[in-house]
Length: 173
Length: 175
Image 1: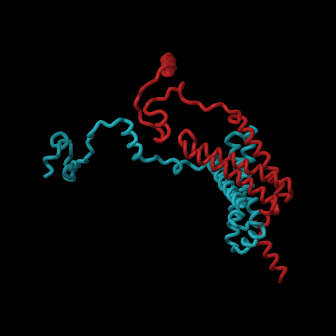
Image 2: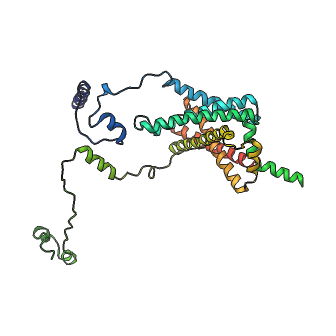
Image 3: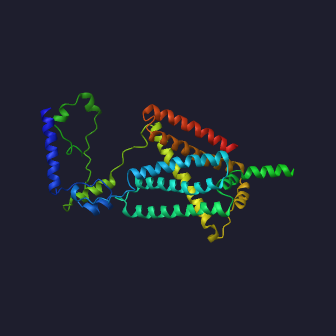
C-alpha cells in the first residue's frame, strides 16, 4: 500500500536521524531503577554510543559447541557408571566433566535471571562464587576418587546403605 | 441533607416512576486526592506509579503445556541436582579442614540408620530429578541435531522422557 510504504520510509528516516543526533525525551523508565538509570538517565540511548562488550572467541558459537560437547560426553560416562559400575578412568572423567557441565548450566541460569546489564553487582558476586564452587566441587570429586573408593562406588554404597545393613542383619540371623 | 448535593433536572426527569420510588438519594462521595504541591519530574511520578502498580497474572493463568512445564522442570531438576552435587563435593573436599569424616563407610553407616520412609522418599526425589534431567538432556541434544523440532515432536519426546524417567526412578528407588 502506498501509505504503508511511506510510513515505513518515514520510520527508517527517523531512525537514521536518531542515530545522527541525541534525542532528548523524558519518558517513564521500563527497567528496574538501579542499572539503566545509572547508565542512561532520562535520555533515550543513542545506539552508536552504547558500550559494546569486547569481542571474545569463547562467546557465541564456540560456547554453544562446548556446552553440547560436554553434554554429549556426560551421557556415556553416566551410562558406564550405571550399567558397568566403577572404573577409575570413568570416575576421573566424571569428576571433571560433570562439574564443568554443571558450571556451564549455572552460567546460563545466571545469564537468564541475573544478567550483568541489569544486576552489575549481584551477577559479579554470583559468578565468582560459581567459579569457586566449581573448583571446590572438582577438588572434592578428585579427593573422593583418590582418598576414597571412587565416585561410582561411593554413590553406590550411600545409595544402598540401608540395603546392605538389612543383608548384614539377615546373615547374622 | 443531601438534596443540595444532588443534581436535579435532567437526570431526575428521565427516571421512571418505579425507579424513583426505589432510588436512594444520590450521595456524591468525595475522594480526596493529594494536591500537586510541587511540579514533580515525570521520572519520579513514573517510579511511584511503578511501585504501586499491581502485576498482571502470568504464570497463574497460562495453561500448563508440555513445552514450558517440561522446560521449567528440566531447569529446576538441573539446578537441584547440580547444586546439591556441588555442595556435597565441596563439603567432601573441605571435610578435613572442618574435622568431618565423610568417607563412604562413615556416611553409609549414618545413612543406614535412617527410617525407611525418609530414605525411600530421598532416593525417589534424587533419582527422579537426575533421571528426568538426563532424559531431558537427550531430548535437547535431539533437538540440537535438528530432529523433531515441531509441536508434535515436543509432545512425543516429552512423553517419552517422562516415561523413561518414571521407569528409571522406580528402578533406582526400589532395586
